[in-house]
Each structure stands twice: as C-alpha cells, then as structure tokens.
Image (cartoon, rainbow, N blue to C red; front, side):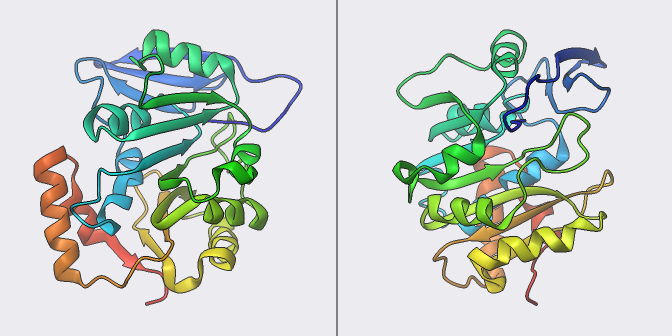
Length: 252
C-alpha cells in the first residue's frame, strides 16, 4: 500500500501460516496475502471484492483497456489483471521495499510491454495531466501501516481519480464501512462522481467496504448484472455471483 512522502517508511516484513504468505508494514496488520500454491489467485476476500468493477463493464470490454492500481499491497490485483485478465496494467507504489518484496516473495513479475510498476506518490500520479482519461479500471487501496485509515481520502484526490478514468471506466476503493469516516469518504467521492454513480458492497467481517464509482456508465439492469457475474465467474474464477447478492447503488 502506498504512503505519502514521509521521512521514514515502515519496514516491510513477511510471515507465513497455513500455506499463505502475508505482507506487513512494521505491524501485525495484514497489508496483503498470497496462497503459495496459487500465487496468481486473489486470496483475501476484500481484495477479491475490489475486482467488482468488472460487474459494471460490458462482457466484451471487461478485460480490455488499462488497469491501474494505486497501492501495490502484495500485488494480488496487479498480478491478476496482468496474468489472468491480460490487461495493460500499471501499479503505483511509493515504498521501494514493498516493490522489492513483492518481486522477491509474492511472484510479481518484472515490467514488460503490458506491466509497469511505478515508484511514485499515488496523489502525484493521479494529479498528473498526462494520466487524464488513461484508466479503464482503477483500484485504490491506500492504507497506512496500521491499516487504520486511508492515506489519501480527500475531495481533491477523488477528483483526480475521476479525471484519470476513461469514459466508461470504473474505480473501486477500499474503505472501512463500519467506521464513522465512511460516510465522509462517500460524500467526497460523490462530489466528483455524482451520487448516482456510486455502488457499494456489504462490509466483510473485518469491516472492509468496497465502493465503486463509475464515469459515463449507462444504467444497467439486474438481469444484465447477473449475466455479467456468470461470465466473470466462469471465465476468471472470481466469486462474482456472490458479489451480485451484496452490491447496491448507494443512491437507492
């Protein structure tokens, strides 16, 4: 997970239990995970739900275009977009040790013609006019070393994320749905995306709530979402039919 410019960054540590490797930033809090025998699958439930942006993309476009991740974590989303979806994929991470550990311990491949791992502050990347309209899928997972609150969670940042999306693009954001800050975060996102463009999944048992924001996406009926969920689960092995039971438009 990316962090804003600070004098020192938390040390990156790795642990293993029951066949799963975990990434930490100087605390016991889990910042990412990988099942060692399935290194290109997404292990954590909330990270799987970050991929629910796929429900809001047409079947023939779901794996097309450019996927961007702000915050690398254990590289689960980056690897999935690059290897499974075969999308052009960019991950932005400030901490160079996170990048090195992901490459050494979490099977993150070296950059190639479809993959770029950029060492940069996510706020600066999002605000760069060169990236305007460049992302078809944008995943934002930017928590501090205590996993207590998002590092970037202001209206200007979400406005930059909206500008970065291409028409028809979808952003997914990891928030703590049981925290008092959740409603404030949603209001900040709504200033740029519009309240009618926001969706949310139910919180995980740990309290993570994934919020989706769309840009120029036409309204979609439930039957179409069900067909997309079936396609996603069949083609890519993600629990999209489960997502369908827990997703709703926030304006409803």
